[in-house]
Image 1 (cartoon, rainbow over the protein chains, first blue to last red):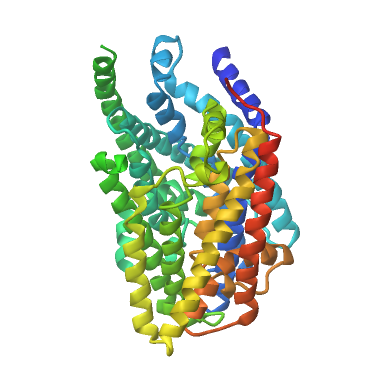
Image 2: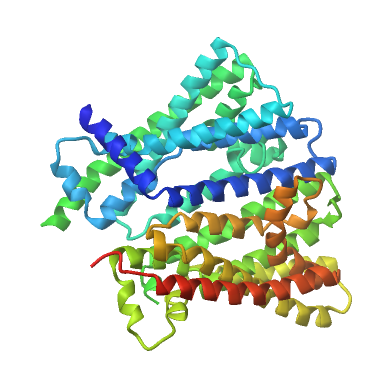
Length: 260
Length: 246
């Protein structure tokens, strides 16, 4: 286990070394989130969606979405880049799990971003947006976040593993998450989708990876919705676990043939 | 052209850009099913902003957007040093080094959306508006180019600024929304969003016939000042550059 701690420590040192680079990423995300939130306030001001949200509740919703998104980000580039650069050969020879290494390296980044989001929440809280969570809800949120993170991790392994066959996987990743943006609640709260798109969203994993955990955090789900949501998170996790396992077992044979 | 040789990737990017535009198109259609305007911006005015922002993105991808990806990597690998000895302006050579041809589909998609919006808006004096519009599009491209130059100047000192792409894309993506519809927000937010409004919202207003001389002049003057400033900053940073790698 010590070796994985060292991977996290090295990733933290790299983040500290190139801290301006890290700040640029935070700035980009923060400005985009601020702009979208401001635009949504203008939309709410026009009368659209007032039956579901006020400015303050929408701020909490957006913060919850950003929090879940940050925590469960799939780290596809940590998987694909070593394959492209050839460093993956070294990872195969060393006595550690590549998957666990990816997870360990992603932890410092996640902790720092969550810290920043928590600061933003404190600011919003001081401006009057209140939010309460009891211990039972908190445990359910943790479970949902864990399932969401695991599901997105395996989709990351699947999409990143395509790097064994395709020179660039940005296309597949962007296509996947562009479609996801509409059905996950990131671009628009799911309640605003028309009937057809709402129906489609129930058949896809995106809403269970982002919208459902966010609404669980906000206490906006019923008991039956919690049971259905957690079950579907588990089902999608299993699907992508096996999909990534099959892809990587085929990839290992493909990678060997390139080495020969 | 090597981008097209990787056919599956090229066609995938064609699908991505089309789906990406369609996704936001659907988003605005959903919003405007229940409201007639957002702070004075109607459905087709908003879609026109989206089309223009996409057009600017497409034109940028075919010209200088590669600056944000390749420049930092070249410095890290030590490949930038070779550019310094070539008899070509290094700023120009670094900025227009690579044509991102896989993004070419953005331009016809955006033109379709612009034409669709204009048909529904039916603005008067379209031909006159069009000439001013072209001028503002050029101004927007110069503003974006100058902003990217300023940001990339940091790479000459800090070496690794690959996340600058994330920041730059955030600004470009925000321009797909009518930022001039955003009102009653904090001063900080207004200051951050005003430059973004210059990029797509102001050209859109001109095209559908709303001329606001202050915004038009601000866009043109900003483009000139930013270009001069960014060039000076870049060349000054270059004078203090020492190779990051052998």
